Every structure is written in structure tokens, then in C-alpha cells.
Image (cartoon, rainbow, N blue to C red):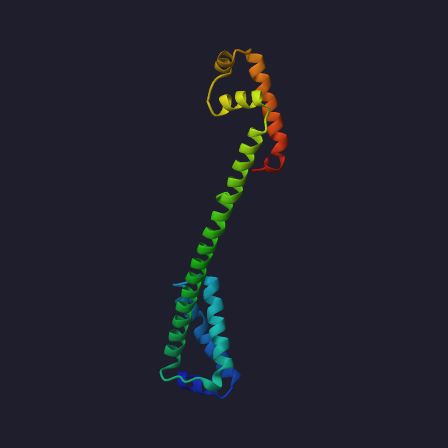
Length: 178
């Protein structure tokens, strides 16, 4: 059947004309569209186009040949699908970056709160423990240097550091996961 007869039959609702058009153009359209998108997406797109033609047959305005109309419609739908896919990919990338930042970077306020809590807990240590702890952790002194500077034994330095750490662990137990 020639293309104009096929088109006229489809416009009049002839299912045989539609079936013939489908058989004649489905594979070539899939091959054409699969140059731009995946085979699975191409088949789905062509199927949607064919269904659209049947559903909207009363409103079709084909001014060229049926073949030209189908290939132009397939091309336009393909480009729309590509644009839509690129837009979705761009949105996903933006969302991914925002979510990634939230999970990779610790919350500034929680870190600041933790620093305040640590300073407060250190200030609450007994004076002798606090002095040894600060010299060890912030003064970067060895236990031997601390013992010499304070005139106490290395064992006393070790004991005071151990006790300080134990006290701090108890006071900061709610923040240990951080």
C-alpha cells in the first residue's frame, strides 16, 4: 500500500493501515533513534510515537510524506528525551553535591559546641590534673619534661594524664561519636 493510502486509512481509523504502517516503519525508526539514545529507550520512544499517532489520528496534520513525518517526529521526540535526560542528570548532580557537602563536612555549630564543651571540661579538671594535661596535650611536652618542670615523678604525670582522660571521657560521653 502506498504511503498516502496508509495515511488516509490511519486518519479514517483503519486498523489494517495502522498495522501496515507499524510493520513498515517501526524497525527503521528504532534504528534511526538508537543512533542517539540506547536501544531500549529507542524502542520505547518509537512505540510511544506509534501509539500517539493512533490516538491522535483525527488531529494529525501531515503535510509531507508519512515517512518524513514519522522520522521528523521521532527525531524531535529523541532530542526532547535527550534534553530531558540531561536536565535530570544536571539536577541529580546538583542535589548530589548539596547532600554530599552535608554529610562530608561536619556541622560547624556542632564542632564549635564540641570545642566549647571540651574547653569547659578541661577547666573543670582538678588544678594539678589540668596543669599536667595541658602541658602534655597543648604544650607538646613529654612526660619526662613535665615531671622535671613540676618536680614530680613520671608515674605521677602518667597517672594524672590517665585520670584526666577518664574524667573528660565521662563529661564528654554524649559527644564521643563525633
